[in-house]
Amino acid sequence: MMDPMDELRPPTRLMLTPGPSCISPRVYRALATPLVGHVDPWFTEFMGGVQELLRRVFQTENNITFPISASGTGGIETAVVNALEPGDEAIVCVNGVFSDRMAEIAERTGAKIHRVPAPFGRTVDPGDVRRAGQGRKIKFVGLAHGETSTGVVTKLEPFRKVADELGALLVVDSVATLAGVPLDVDRQGIDICFSGTQKAISAPPGMSPITVNARVEEMLRKRKTKVQSWYFDLTTVMNYWGKERTYHHTPPISLIYGLHEALRIVLEEGLEASWERHRQNQAALIAGLEAMGIRLFVENPEDRLPTVTSIYIPAGIDGVKARGRLLNEFNIEISGGLGEIKSTTWRIGLMGYSSQRANVLLFLDSLERVLLDQGMKLSIGAGIAAAASSFAHAEPVPVGHGR
Ligand SMILES: Cc1ncc(COP(=O)(O)O)c(C=O)c1O
Image (cartoon, rainbow, N blue to C red):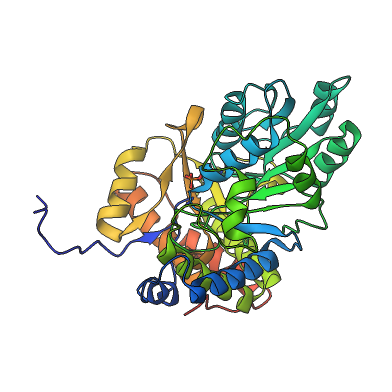
């Protein structure tokens, strides 16, 4: 039993989950630096630097670019409540729990939401979006670039094209992709893009970077009704994050320090190097898992999200027990499935600071031990050998990530 008066001493876990990921010692150091006031001139100048680094990571010149003081769900909320007014119509591509959440939040605005579904493990067909929008005035097409609940990545270009045909904005949830998967907000024509800090950026959870373009700024100016959320109203939050820097709410100053250091780490490595590291580490993980006879949930390799790998729990294995043993004996956390695939799948995250070669090998070795002990027939060492061979054939990438 924990005594509430005990000193805080959390275990040191290797988080191979779909978030949060582990964070660099450099980020821990930034979190422990002295607090200043949120309107202290030093801090208001520092905020400009954070915004500039966010623009580089999103690859945008958008003026409205800042971290919302809320987790990724706050990013979804901000995107949809600012874009929609009662009576509007919008399309949300639903292929998992998080894209479903976008639809659910959007439905609460009084707008009419057309859900365009795809089975879990697949991407939505842009042709279905075109058909759903034909003859309607659609405000936006929304989707999750990386659907974390299933481990699916969606190519954005076809959806930009359909959104153009419908005269609609493109709203992209990049919570599971920013800094880990190629994403270029300006070149790909994303009108509203939001993310989370706890995944490939590897800062603590609790902030949601967002960027919106000039077209959205214009739309905000033309709104007939007030944005229904006071907290997430971009027109007023920007009094603080814009030129004036006047009080709107008290932001999580220490988290912003941590985010700043994490963004510096991402940009020191370089976006392309980071994407390649995520790609290579997942390729080795997949090679190892398949050599152990484990089946991937996402059938089409092109649809596999580099940051999150969904697998079927092997037949005869007690999924909850196995994950518990990984955690308690090996200090490794992976996640169960979500939604309709909750009891049949596991999700392994390799994101940000957690996405390292050594972690792939350590995980495969630990998993092998756990599966063998539950009676699974395995060729001992086959997983590690396959992963090591995958690494041996990969282009060298920097091993460190902000150490
Ligand atoms: C794609 C996606 N969108 C939104 C969210 C919600 O983020 P949060 O849990 O930080 O509120 C998540 C969280 O995992 C996610 O993966």
